[in-house]
Length: 302
Image 1 (cartoon, rainbow, N blue to C red):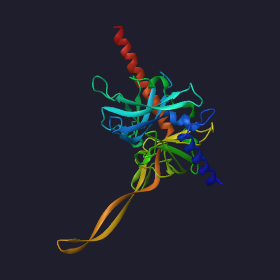
Image 2: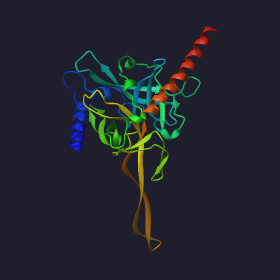
Image 3: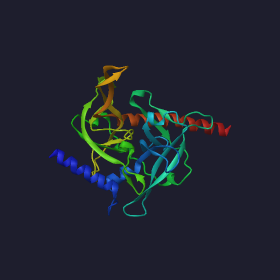
Image 4: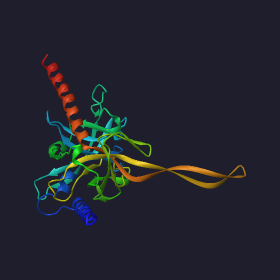
């Protein structure tokens, strides 16, 4: 029965992602509105989905932040992503894509983004200080009260994660569509643990669900449809690999030899950094950028 419910729930949320229905916006539409699609490339039409991010609101100074994986930023000078215009003048609200090329360094060449101190969590946060288009007026941020603590997730819980796997070749009106996947929480790291030579630490957990390229930064939620109790419990940062040996006969210099190749496979276990880390990241960013703003005001007044 639980499996049937999960399947029906996935079908429902996928339907909500791919079609606007009459009446109030579904939770799926709310989640999709706060999702950011991070792209490879800098020109429209010559880019592919690279991963995801989520828009959240700071608690202290009201800044809006983009939270994503550290490895998606890399050494870039700018980040090309697609936000969603959230037009509430129609019922249901109309969601339309908005392309953004956002600088990752300030005028002095210093990064404007912050990485989580423990690099194992692979989390970065970018303040959206200035936007040169209309997106800043119409986008929707994920409500901070729906971000769960690590204690809010247990082994055996069924969760959903949505993102752009396979560099998302599923498109609607020329735009990549987020795909929803699901699985149970198969392991919750209460202490440092090594699985297949991959280190997990407290604050991370595994989902019994396949995560592929393009799922990096995928938000993980506890429910779907119009369930108001749904919570954000983490974001996907990778998967547990499995190294297999593939052997075959080959002829080298006229001699028959056994050639062995190491092939990495996906075990179907997605690695998730818990949402409490996202809360902590927002607090760190609020403190840092409050100091920057106050310092700029003091310099201006001198």
